[in-house]
Length: 171
Image (tube, rainbow, N blue to C red; front, side, top):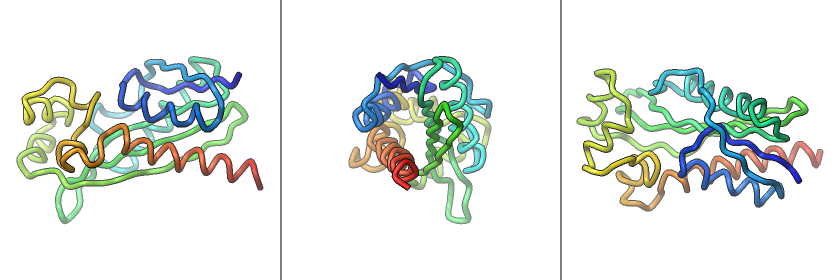
């Protein structure tokens, strides 16, 4: 059986990665590995790097066939601070694939907290008066009225990653 490792224990990310298991016919193993970036990535580049590091570290840690890294961050634009999310899929043979997903503008009061050095997860917990928002609907769920939740947002990224892998295998 194919062994697929995801570099997190976050339930929302694990739920999204289960899609890869169904598509690739493998067993999912969740391992805690470092992202190698700040707790609150503040650019597309840093968020991508975190996803790549998690995929690489999960692949090695679990001695898997595939490693998956999913990372959320924020991006400053002239129009405000937006959430961003990136994923990486790496194979034990050295192939790697990267994909990004949805973006949504954060309210100014949330953005101010992040600019002051705080991380989005705890800020969202305070903002919503709930615990562990990052493990459930995430900021995207809160601000999209749960039309798109964090796991569904990362599912789209997983579809893009698996699709790229399948395309490469086909060609």
